[in-house]
Length: 276
Image (cartoon, rainbow, N blue to C red; front, side, top):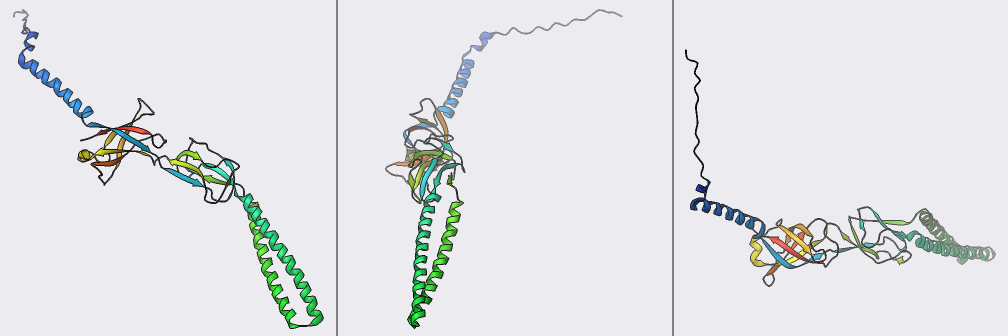
């Protein structure tokens, strides 16, 4: 047997790179590149339109005194953020009410003393003269004294309640920010009078007017970008939250919401609105 080794040689054809520089290949590459550019333009550039005039809307809500009295302390300042349930200010309403109750108690006690003297005088006259008229006066006086004693007992109960009552604290009903303090510590506030003006964290938006021609190209939930003149170079991703059902002079209003918007109502803004 022969032990000769067999060898195989594979020869690959030479690849000519110049063959790629043909017109069909170059045309295909050009069409692919322009398609990519066109797709990027369609997705990232073309669908947006700029609304140059828009405004931040941040409604204010009053925080009023729940009683009449002096503001003992303001626990927040203008521009401070607060959380729901946080104490905003304290009111010394019990002190003023206590003075009023004590004055009312003093008047009732003085009337009771006067009625007691009148009863004693009427009883003395009745004993001396034994006339029916004096007996009727005695009965009226006794009835009046009973009413005054009941009134005094009720007033004393009110005074005890107020004496055990500390300063009243006003808690925040929601998360928000203090816009304006209308009362300062030491100033008097009447029942229902506004002490603070605040904004609600979730209750501010940007309002803009759009031409009616693009109404069919947007919807609630459509994406947008917000820019404020006061904050150059910063953008807020936003969404359309409301579209007005009323068209006026070819335009209608839309509202856009975003996270962590400024609280300064009236700020000028620009809207980059995505249309489809």
